[in-house]
Image (cartoon, rainbow over all chains, first blue to last red; front, side, top):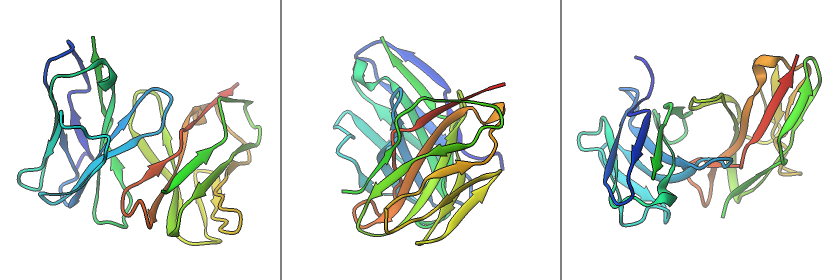
Length: 113
Length: 114
């Protein structure tokens, strides 16, 4: 097991385009989290899944954002009609359960031009 | 809601100096407290944690003690190395507002010069 994998590592897109990121958690982890980190700030919670169920979404997750975890394994985060304010590092993490430590991926850096 | 406040950075030290990075929190309930480290271009790695009052977390020479009376979880290391240069984040989980998700501080950039 190589840990949490995120793809792509970097994405540059034009304003108004749609982008999709993928996260592959550690296989035995049933919880998967998405965070957003802007330059010089700590990560901010976006959403999390327990298996395939999306249990919580932050108010930061506008209608342009959608996340899925269709079979309780990998997850995707899609941003529609990207805006310059969406430029950030998008981090994925997984854990074995609600009170276990998180393992973070290396993140996907999105730049909207 | 739950929140974490870290000392303002950046912090610049010489090798072998003593390190303290202050962290205070606001939360109801009985949160667990964490320190994460982020090296350039990488994701966050768990450095240490404490799950209840008066617990001391330690790892790689770093220590932090969960002080409920002062709502603090300050990070310390007796002798820093150049390889400790990174961004350090204090975080909590398990407060009544945050539940199982992590709430992070804004991070403190540490640079250690040889």
